[in-house]
Amino acid sequence: MHRRIQSLPVQLANQIAAGEVVERPASVVKELLENSIDAGADQIELEVEQGGARLIRVVDNGRGIHRDDLKLAMAPHATSKVYSQQELEQIASLGFRGEALASIASVSRFRLASRLRGAEQGWELASDGVSAGELLPSPLPGGTFVEVRELFYNTPARRKFLRTERTEFLQIEALLRRLALSRFDIGFTLLHNGRQSLRLRQAVDEAQQARRVAEVLGRRFMQQAVQLQFEAAGMRLWGWLARPEGSRSQSDSQYFYLNGRVIRDKLINHAIRQAHQAALEPGRHPAYVLFLELDPRQVDVNVHPTKHEVRFRESRLVHDFIIRALADALSGEVAVGTMPVPESMQGEPVRTGSTAPAIRRSPGTSHAPQRIAEQQSFYRQAAHAVARAQPEQEPPLGRARAILHRRYLLAESADGPLLLDLERARRHLLRQHLEQMLAEGEVRSQPLLIPQTVNLPDSDVAVLLAADELLSRLGFEIERLGENAVVIRSLPALLRGVAVEPLLQELLPQLRQQGREPTTISAGLRDAVVSQALAAAPITALAEADRLLRQVEELPQHGTEFWQMLSLAQLQQWFAVHGSGSQG
Image: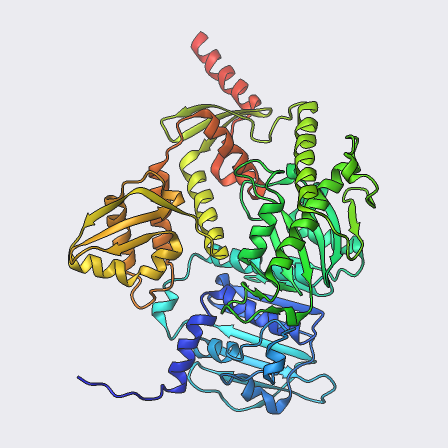
């Protein structure tokens, strides 16, 4: 049947747009918080219930919305942040697409109330996901109130892709922490199911800012960080950078901001990795909170729907500037210690603090690449020398001693023996690692030495080809080979060594369940990849198990949900009881 072209109904168009803007509760929170920040709020309260699926409420004390603009605020392609092409080319605000509120309102029970600063009366508007109601007076004292209830209630196919309440809430909490580091001048409060989860007061001076960083990343990060400020070529990079001994086994303590906007950009990530190349051991990741400031006209932030990736007009200049700043910061940290200073580093201005020395460079300072390499090499040698000179510290979870039944790890700690569930701990760490790579758009791929051909029914081949974009994001490279076969050229690096045909049989049911969401990587599909990664590389050596222990130690509360400690006192009591019984 021939179908004619026609305009989509407004409601359907909004719900389609919501597919780009609203992926999960954290997506809604991001849009609403960015609006509050752009409105000049210095106090923002976020309340959620059931991980945001039941309720998301944001209250701020910003400038507010004019009465006559409330209905327009919920219309598609309406915004107060961009009026012209010229303003689009030098974006200074966070949210400016003009689709967020309309999209959110189309998939929830939505309520918007606001009182313009200086106005005598506040006003509110409600929507049931189909149409907006009448404009009514509101007792709101000032600012803006946004309430999102029953997210995806009218699109059940989308609602079923939500993860557990805890997972969705952790996504929201992580988002709030990222935003809180971008704006020290704003106080943030987070409540979940009626209980306060996080409260961050305004941080005006350097001491308060350092305290907020410690609240978000932990006191240990601040104890192992250098504070830096570097200016050159119209750019400024400042913030906190962990020394190599403060590196992590995962890239979960990396916060980078461009003109106050959270970004995860490939060019930036490459520059940071290159600056640390000589200072970090393989498999370790730097930890940092860094702020890059430059003329907004020198960067395009509107090249990606989530605005995490950007495009610089002078990308090479930005790349080299970051490498130089970070390499100097790392090298300068050695200069304030007791190690001898190489001639190339002498005479550099270095200001030290109590726990976070500040490395300051004047604008226009030039450093040749050879000097950077020399400094990095020197720093790495110095760090190894310091490590050799210090006595070995007993780690919190002790040392791996035996693997029991290929599932449990017996470790010996200062407090007694410890049993770790290897499978549960590895599954959590692998899932966390995969989530991080997906968030950064950098799932590492491993080309197969010999591409493998797999014969499949035509229907299965069609499923794989329909999910080509999604599989590519996961690190797969799959091509059709005739009517009933595919050739696999690359796999995710996580799945190195896995048997290809059984892998596809595991993935196909999950891919079929993707339904009409071919660009959404479902929880089932992620779990299938993690399960295959677990099966492909079981831990059999104590050295591997010991490395896993160190990774578990870096989890919140040292990952207590994955292990049990049996104290020496318990052991003594157990043997005393059983020993006395055997003597009788």
